[in-house]
Image (tube, helix red, strand yellow):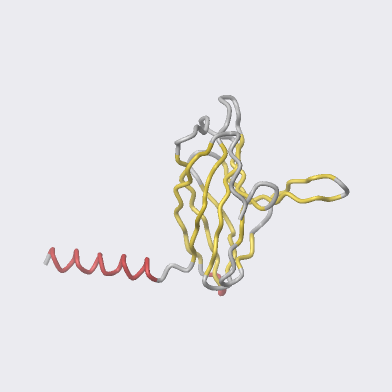
Length: 147
């Protein structure tokens, strides 16, 4: 009986992994100085179907989706309600554009730490999926490679 239950649970977990609609890669968070209360997390996200990133959560801070853009010859940063994920097209959350803003940090983010993020993806029809990501912290001076 126990073996059957274990086998069923393993089969279900593999089926879920095989059907994953969203992939995340190149995730990183910017390290901070000791007194800093804010930072950013960046990543590339791709959905197999049209979807939308609608929320992000983490236990280390208050997390929001933000966008930086030029307006009236000034760089502005604003919270956004969501980020469209067109089917099969990678979307970059990067410095100077869309990103995850981490505010009210509970502790300093140090190189080598990991920030757990839960990305909330809304599929067509309103079905939501949580994607768990372990985001490595890079040094404050880190610059990601250009693709």
